[in-house]
Image (cartoon, rainbow, N blue to C red; front, side, top):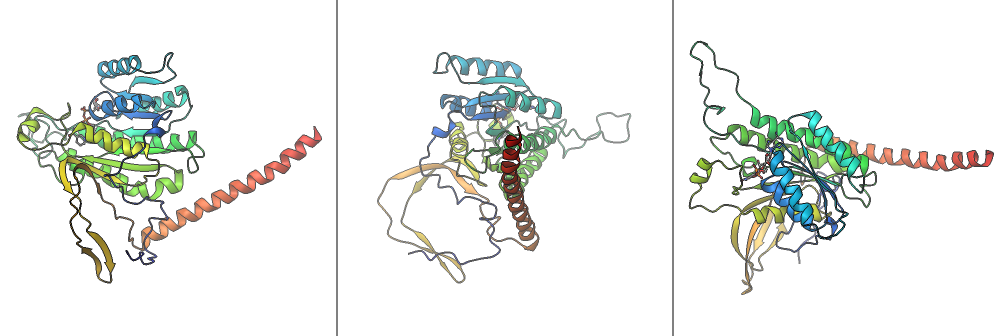
Length: 377
Ligand SMILES: NC(=O)c1ccc[n+]([C@@H]2O[C@H](COP(=O)([O-])OP(=O)(O)OC[C@H]3O[C@@H](n4cnc5c(N)ncnc54)[C@H](O)[C@@H]3O)[C@@H](O)[C@H]2O)c1
């Protein structure tokens, strides 16, 4: 029998309400998707469009923002025409949104809040992203294309603008609108922010310096936010880090370099994103999506001992082989923290408790003040 974990004051996963590691071999229930209002940036193509198709089939309301208006409008027409209910009560719409523009993103969130049948935004996917293309603008190859000027031009930081500034805008708006419209989100109403990093958020992609920087930054954003977003705003935050998937994002040169090698599959990204979106108990977890791997279960298990963890091998089960593409990553940030993080999180929790009591006292007094007011009328 496994020994229960020892009490460790520096372990703050309970303080931040992080859920246990995700067992990606287990089935999950998608019924919570029906009626959820989900806003997706970059939803006209690739992952965003695949999420939209899948979640629309499960009855979610969708607001899609993108710069590719043709693809976005086409997708929405397709989803509306394939909607099961007639006349449909499902809300699916597209709005032009350049994520590098605060005004565009604010307008997208406002449309979602005003038009969704539930008058809520339940979930947000920060999906818009681009890569560096060609060589003219590569960050690590500064070159002076203008022979009359003695200095190099400033770098084109468009990848950072979309993949980082854009994601920061989306996140900031999500943290504003999700709790605002779902005031009871820490109770029974789900609020979820799904960030999209990449394998380039975990390892370097040489030749994609800006992209690698932006995706590491998204991972940093996730790791910091999962410590605070639930405590302060009642928002669960999760992240996906997919390996290469054949979408319009991948330039032909990238595809050529991958020739003959295994890629990750779009269906596995959709599966991992859907698990995080539908299972409202998953908070603060990161899933990497890679090529499918053959997994043979054995009854090996872990036992804690003084010096750490010992793997105890048991008899291999002759059971079925399975194929798995989705794995947990970066699971242990909050398993053991240092004093600054511990104190900061403790203060946040105290403030949350005080806010709760202030709210209680206000409501309590309000009852009597209200009653006296009624009595006088
Ligand atoms: N395809 C992959 O191999 C892969 C792997 C890991 C992570 N990702 C990430 O997944 C996300 C989705 O990528 P994808 O593979 O679906 O690519 P995609 O090109 O099919 O989709 C990206 C979408 O973002 C939109 N977009 C680009 N600039 C925008 C802007 N300024 N404002 C709004 N929308 C904008 C595009 O029009 C497009 O519809 C990106 O963040 C990408 O970095 C992709």
